[in-house]
Picture 1: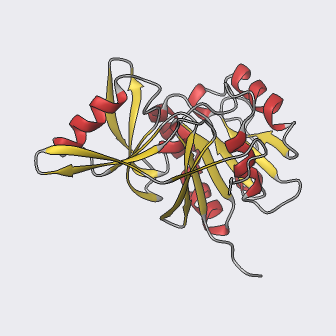
Picture 2: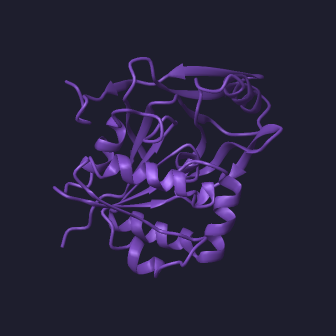
Length: 240
């Protein structure tokens, strides 16, 4: 059987918890190539919040898929069997530092890497976006934004909520200019970066003004460049 290309879709924010029509989530499911794909939520970053999980089911049961979730704070299932049997895995937002620490205790990073290699679509919003990169810019600390080592599936640095939280843009520019973080992929709420393997394939957007950006160091300053983007239709298809 031909091995599928590894895929990661990192969403800057504004996922199913706030979007009335989750176009990017439809796009994620479409990348599985299945008519009725299975998708598992990892809501670890919210401590498996019942409210967050309920919103996931409320959204995804309408999207022509088979949703489930993996609990790490209740009675935890056989994670290897559950995660590696999915067509897609969706990682929710919340506290990235706590999520990664919990994942390591349960051996989830290795399972996610195996899922990625098998071609199971990995996706997520906010914490679920930055976790895949070498470094993520996170608000896991209440008083500041800071870089945090991620899983390292993807190179470089990622920052979500670039337009949604006013401190994001100046903080990223400062970190890049000072060499605290490497070249950074910054994503607005409603924008997602689709990677095939470790290469950025495209930026897709579910909101008219959403975009993605590269913030690179040039001399002693940071230079921000808008990346080409493609808009999604209400069904999650790429508009021509």
